[in-house]
Length: 153
Image (cartoon, rainbow, N blue to C red):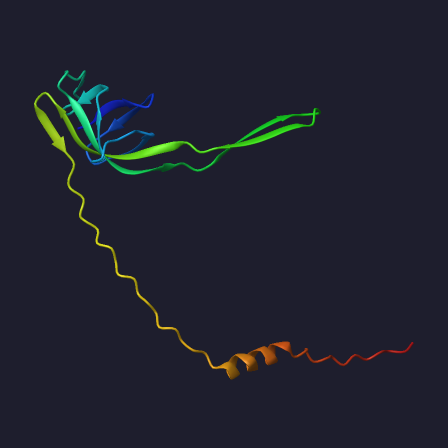
């Protein structure tokens, strides 16, 4: 079961449980997003149709951020013209939680709650001062010179 939605001027094929990156969306306080522009919905095997007015796709905001930097480089040869600009596109990652049409409702399975792991604090180990000084002294010794023999002709 999937639906084709339009968001941010692009079309996405989504199913319950999918995570998609769309253009930056403004959401409410609960982080719930409803996509109203549904282009197509698939029912069973090989069935696809135009959705009714009561159909909707609902998602939950997972994260908001900016994508990797894209470098835009303009260059004109023989004219000493170079221009470099950077661009980072803002995005919103949305997990599709529900697709509803024709009185049917398809929901994604709930994600298990992740508990934060406690941080391990290692006890500081005091290194003996003499041991580190001896290592430095050994490292500074010059290498032994090789005996060379000169041959006379």
